[in-house]
Structure formats: C-alpha cells, structure tokens
Image (cartoon, rainbow, N blue to C red; front, side, top):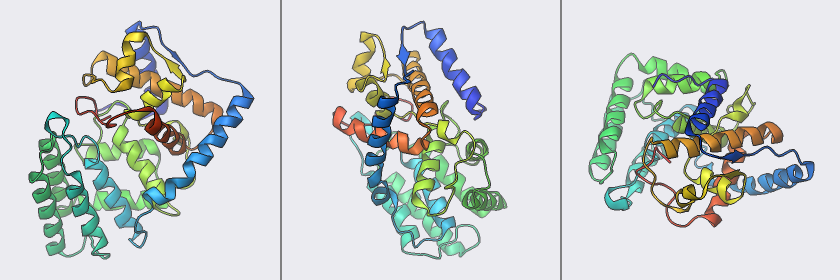
Length: 307
C-alpha cells in the first residue's frame, strides 16, 4: 500500500469515505466542559492497569523488546481459524516469548547464526501446526523476517529500531518503514498494526518514545472493539441497519459498510482527542476496556479487515 501516513491525509481520506457513502451519520462534536472533566477522569482511572498488562520481562534489552513487539504485532491479529474456531495462537506467541525470554542475549542481527536459524525454524513449525486462516500471509512474514536477518537489510532494521529507542523518528516515518519491511504492515488504510505496535512499544519499554511527537495523539488503529464501544456509548450514530455490526454480526472485508464504520470511528476519535488532548494509546485503551462490558463474544472476526 502506498497510502500516505500524514494525519491530514488520513483524515481527508476518512471524510471522503463518509461523503461518498451518503449515509446519515453523526460523530463527536462535544464542547461541554463538565463532560470533558468526567471523561478525562474516567480515562485516567481505566488506564491505571496498563502496566500490569503489557510490562512483561523488562530485563530484555530495549532493542530486543522493540523487535519482539514488532514480530508479535505481525501475527497478533486475525488469529481466527476455520469456522471461527480459535486455534491455539498461544503456541505461536510462546515461541516468540520463549525465544527472547530464555536467551536474554539473543541477537537476530549480529548474534549466533545457530540462534537465528533455531528461532526461525520454531516460528515455521508453530505456524504449520495451527489452522490459521491467514497462514500463507504469516508464513510470508516469517520468510521476510528470515530474509532480513540473513542479509545486509538487517542493518536497515537495526538502525530503524535504534531510532525508535532514541525517540528519533516521527510516527509517519515509523509507519512508512514498517510497511516496507514486512508484508503484514502497510496494508490497512488506518495503519492498524503499525499504530498498535507503536502503542505497545510506548507502554512496554520504560523511557522509550515517552515524549509526545507532533500529531501522535491523533493516530488511532480503529479495531473492531473501538467502533462498537463508540456506538454503544453514543459518541457516534448510525442508521438502524448498521446496528447489527456493532453487536457481533459479520461484516465483509474492505466493503463500503466496513470502511464507513471505521472512517466515522476515526473522525470521532480525532475530534474527541483534539478536545481532550490525551495520549492516543490511553484513549484507545479506554474504549477497548469499555467494550468488554458492552460486547458479547470474540472481538475479532476473520471476515473483517484485521479488526
């Protein structure tokens, strides 16, 4: 995908989707200060449990923590198997966590060739053992990772991660580079995986990218739980025929209804955060957390675009 990651262009893209749909929708335009105070307090209270969720094994080097996060985010969405039966996705994640956690000095860039081969072999084995619907795409990612760490391209990835650790990179550049490095990144019009990996890195690595960079607060992944929470909490409004989608009905991938729901959700969130001025990952987590009490069933539908 060659879509621009510039926030103004993403917003313009979302507005075009809404305009072309000719569907009567409404999204957040609140200016009530009392309401603002209430939301801010609720967000801060909800976000208190974030460290216990993400902050696992901070004994790893920052470079390995970033690399592990990027690899996990390649595979961590769209795990559903045939007939909506969830395969044992923990097998794949265990391979990734075990590889890094059991070998604190694991260096996929310049370390032992034996360690690198062993890691890739285990990834392939765990992938083939499961009935992943997107297995071919995942295997393509694994081979791409293998290609990177075996070739001179690993210097590009190494330098990229160094810039992430130093906070010396814009989110636009971050999104663009990831899209070039791996097939799983760079496909979504709202850059879901890239943004979620950015959130993950901010939360999991102390001292990494903690300073807000320009426009960072306006980037949202728009996954399945966010639109549902926004709709149920009346921050956006759709005609009756759309309500089935917010209550677990399947929605076709990349079709008009899906794009419209995600576009309106995006416009709702950036309007809200221009008003609240919070870190985007805090507001994202707030609605993700709220959705747990609003939705039934799984939060991922394999028919949809990664959400």
